[in-house]
Image (cartoon, rainbow, N blue to C red):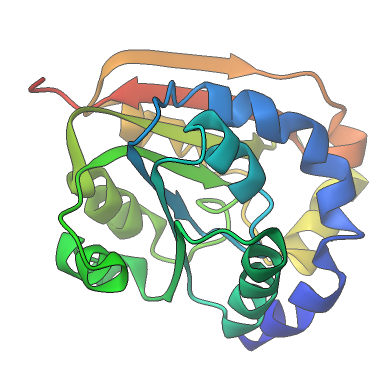
Length: 210
């Protein structure tokens, strides 16, 4: 993860310029309401956080979790600059993340209404374990949203994504969600593989039991 500590210094004015237009639509897919709590998995420098705070009218709790201290350092600067008192950032191995960790961070009882992971499951080495652990954190009826890139065929940009982001864009991470959720939805979004290294996609579903 040392590479991502270094990568954090250029992320916002390089990769994020490409993916910024998708952020608001990704957060809308969570269908959040004011006062709810949401987990931003592999939150990076925090580009989802303005959209999450706005979606909950500034009244909910946002938990950003990342394994990279460098990424979180920049996310904390963003939160401080915006004056957000409801954004809590944790450096954790997400396979071991618990509700108790989140409650310790904010000092109150937490029920997670949504989990969002953007460009994360293609990067995290043990991504299936991370998915299961974070899906389990959802309250019944909570929504899990994945935004990532899938390479159906190799193009030169795929190689760059594999090297620069240390990602595996061939992963079909949405299938893990489809197998365990209700109201599953999947769509490829507009965007050229020659820019993204694959096709951007959005997948979402609800945890059964509501």
